[in-house]
Length: 335
Ligand code: CUA
Image (cartoon, rainbow, N blue to C red; front, side, top):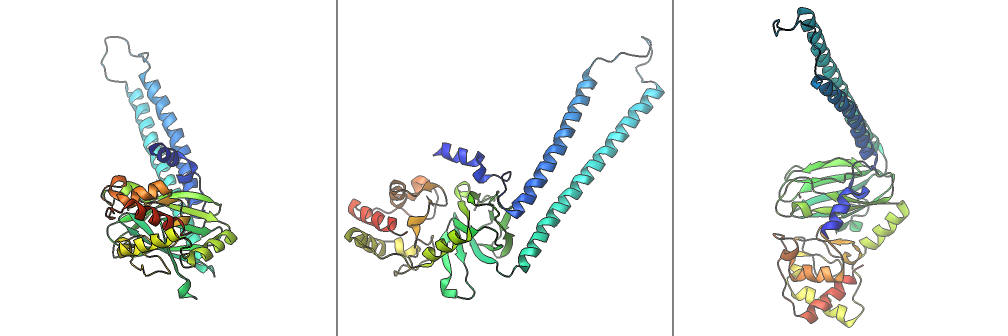
């Protein structure tokens, strides 16, 4: 699993250099300008350093003073002053480029704000998971909550309203946009627009406690049609149990501590301490992107989450194996 994470980290799925959003594109352009300018400067400095190390043929006759001659001193002063001026000019030009890159992102925000049909998504950072709520102003009943997974349609401006329920987190999907801190008590917002379809990995970018490194999210940019389909299936209530074991699994869920923390729409489980599980069966990953959503990992997570993410807020659950199997059957059916 460690290998998978390493590969993910260096892959295009989580890389500011493979932009898939308008704002991410501006940031990547800025990065490349800095990269090439600084590479040229590095090479020049290395060349001059190398030349300075070469043995120098002395023009002064041997035995005379160690002091350089006046003309030599003048030429050294000219070179130093020239280098200082060049450094100031280069730094100033980089500052200007940086300024205009930020301006272009603000200009995109203004365009997006003026758009008639933005999508508003509320993101809440928790230790250690992301709550994702799709608001629906015209039909509040169609508001939908999920966790650690963000679907957005390509080409449509998205307004994220960001807040934290405990400590400072930072929302960051490198392919799409820069970072934004989530400071408790100070809700903030961020505009983004995905330009290319794909699945990208986000990561909390502010140290927020023991499981900070495992506070990830999956960002899925998809066509409007695929997004609408996902929205429709995700806004519906959880499917009813269709087999006896699933039915028993639901009872296990309701009669144990599961329902004290989680919501499953369409049942009596309405708690909001932990992630909404209404459609947990359709998610790729569990535990804020720590483990794949397979039966084995889900069983291990339910039995003792502390083994997987030490310090996580979910307590262990000692269930008889029949109950655990029934619960797994039920949770897997929640597509
Ligand atoms: Cu949340 Cu780091």
